[in-house]
Length: 127
Figure 1 (cartoon, rainbow, N blue to C red):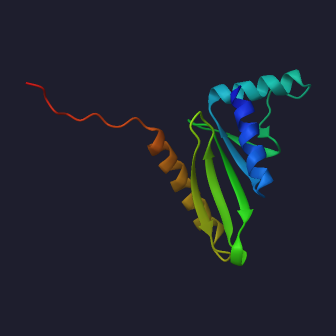
Figure 2 (figure 1 turned 135 degrees about the horizontal axis):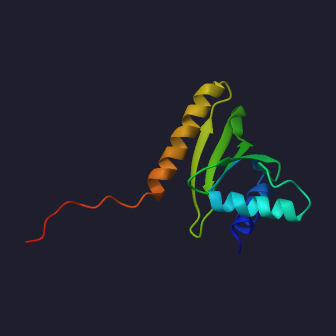
Figure 3 (figure 1 turned 30 degrees about the vertical axis):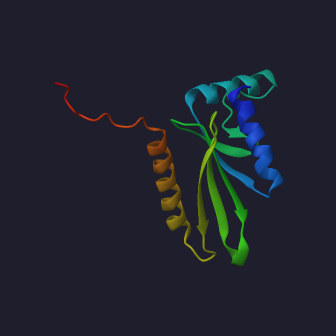
């Protein structure tokens, strides 16, 4: 399955559970695939949206999804689009400032990068 197919399959599952697509992060390769698909379908090759959500260039493929939760809170999930699914979840209070939410989302992206980074090699010497 193509990477865009993986995006669509994961998104369909989330939508069945009431999530909405808020933002998309794509690697250069996936973004090129999206542009080719858009151009083939009669759209422009400068496409910067996927399923109606803004696409940002990134070093990993992921979707930001959101949905209302209990008590007026809002749930956000950063879902990695890869062979092995992985997600980070955060629950925001109704009165939480957008600037604070954005800071938390940036931290979540940093945690995702950390998750995807290969483990650091130890510097033990062999005698």
